[in-house]
Amino acid sequence: MGAFLPNFLRLLFLALYVVLLGRVIMSWVNPRFDSPVGRFLFETTEPILQPIRRVLPPMGMIDFSPIVAFLLLSVIAAALRIG
Image (cartoon, rainbow, N blue to C red; front, side, top):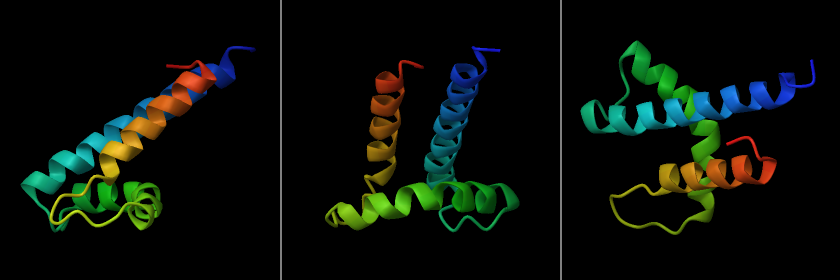
């Protein structure tokens, strides 16, 4: 039972990585996110990316918030020693 929390956190972080990667790929294919999968990816990742966008300075047409989110997830996973 002691391995439940680390396994759960590993699975949660993996799911976040996959959903963020899906959003990045979907933004290249369908940037309006008007499909059901696109809406799911947008609504799932926007609460993570919006606070990062508020902190980052605007850099033209390129959105660096997913890169920062990936880095933050990696740092948190390393700090928790689950990655």
